[in-house]
Image 1 (cartoon, rainbow, N blue to C red):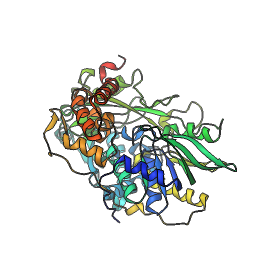
Image 2: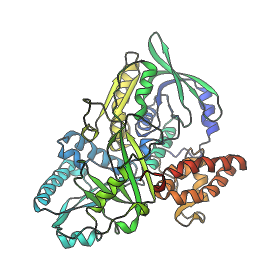
Image 3: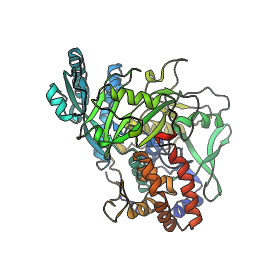
Image 4: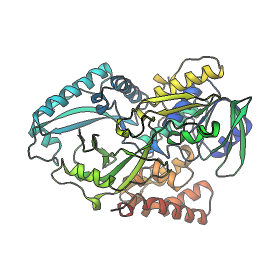
Length: 506
């Protein structure tokens, strides 16, 4: 099943639709992977669906991932076979439904002990077996010479060989926008910068929401047969708007990533360090002409919108990379550093977040608020299907089958090469900026340079340098004046400094 491209999407038209239709079957709160997946699922089944996001789509966790669509090799080692099997099936479905955003990526695991080669080889063979006919390619053993040929920067001393296997890589922020556009194409409504300010109750049951346009200031009162809380790490805060004093269901964890130049991992293969000092794995992945290093797993009691690396996280990643490279990047080589928060499901007090399940949980409050927590990008579609199944039953809506397993998403519009690049180190041009506004819901400088284009994540210094020119194009496209553009540069400058290594604690 294919969706027709909805074409140009103006905020004015989306707001006008919200004004004209205050009554909905399903209201989804949260515009990350899970919320967007829920909105698309509900809209494609024919339910009147609106999604409201307080900031930009994928502003939080969903644009700060390791850019992998994968079953999770380490989860297999933990015995979570069901989670891995489900994720591998969803990986295949996503590669079919969003082919422009998902691609096959080969990983190589260097090994320095023969017993590790046998153990990892057996584990990756099981990984392939679980994927079955939906696999991306078979794992194979490499000798030392073959491993050095594909990973020339790997540490050669004591190298016994390697294991190559295949997984998926994707554009996380790009997929979020594809889901948003696809929801509109399916008949739903999505609005960023539309924070929910309260929940409406009728006879003790959740009956809708109040919301306010963060740009224009207008307030809206919207009724719904069912309200879905898909706000990620902020889900507990929304739950307490409905049920003050309820116990937390989440134990947030932070993951930090570093971006360095392509010279640190030349060639097309990614590198996996199978065991780090904290018991996790470390990925070193080619990404948009750079190399992405990550990630950490650090508990956090707070849930800031813009999380920053905690003391030691950057050094941990660099130290781990140095353990397997003949020449490793240092702090001065880091082009950008970013952090994201995982909405992990709570367990026993004191349990390390690295051991918490990445499986999702759906909870319904006594008043009927449906909350989804946990999970990961790879399984967003399956999570959404389960949420909407639950919501439909709860609300007494007519039962209709899920359409998303074979629903081809609306793909991004091509703009590459349409005009001259605005910066020598970034592939952004005027056409890309204008497309972000007209077709991709972008409203400000951060939207463009952080998520519609990944400049802030790829090279924070270059993003700072190109910001004035991008802001000027934005102002002209959105109908703002020079003062607006100047204010945008000031605001973005503060944000971008936090992505530069100099701003992080030594």
